[in-house]
Length: 93
Image (cartoon, rainbow, N blue to C red; front, side):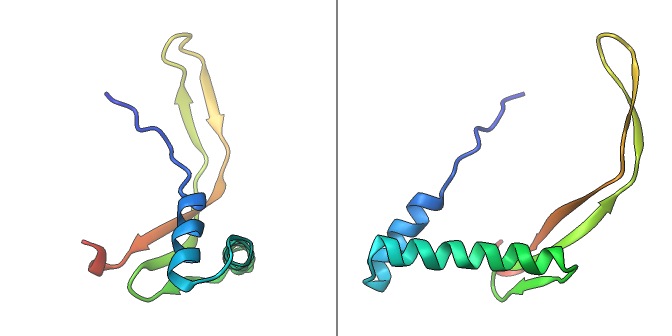
């Protein structure tokens, strides 16, 4: 199985927005950071965030589960936790 390498596109997004909006990199970076902080704040308050034409972000709860280490065969408990999920818009398909 091939493993995908995670890529951070923040820098590219900021550069492209800066050019398209004819603003400085610093102004665009501040706006981008404000947007990300706002999304995080709303998610922490248990809100669903809908971005028209893109998708919606929401928190979901994962149950506690048991798993076995494949080599040592030792059993572990993975505790319950909250995660953020995104359901993308049909427009992106």
